[in-house]
Length: 199
Image (cartoon, rainbow, N blue to C red; front, side, top):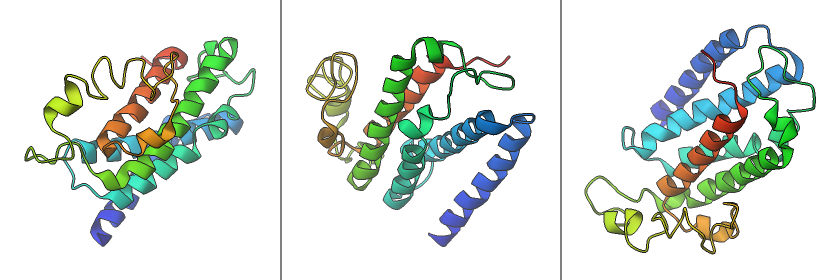
């Protein structure tokens, strides 16, 4: 456990140094939000390997990762995007300000999912690699599951018509990798709509 925590700390220090170099020239609120996005990105990469089974699952590290994401989401995220703060080297699209409600909704959704991920950490993964995980494959991807078209991604009590969470208590009952996927999809949706693709 100590080795894992030290490895995580060392990895985050190294990636932080790389992020600082990549964000050269950024200052003020632009640097603050680039640092916040970098911290979330590093956390997502670390957790992603655990969710895919490439690293041993550790509920406490998932909780810590969820707390990092939560600390940079919701209002903490939106306050880093005051109007007229899209100057280089910012990767923010102007649509953030012209479609502020959509951006704000995604930031709040990310916060709800991050809280849910922390609460679901103790549930483990849907698949433990031996077919004996919390849910079988048919449950998670087919039929009447939360993840099926009529389930998690459809219109259910869990998701509102606009795709926003209606019942955070349901999230905490899911396997951690299912909630992690919801976090990742929210990040991806926000980036595709509001982040400039760097060539």
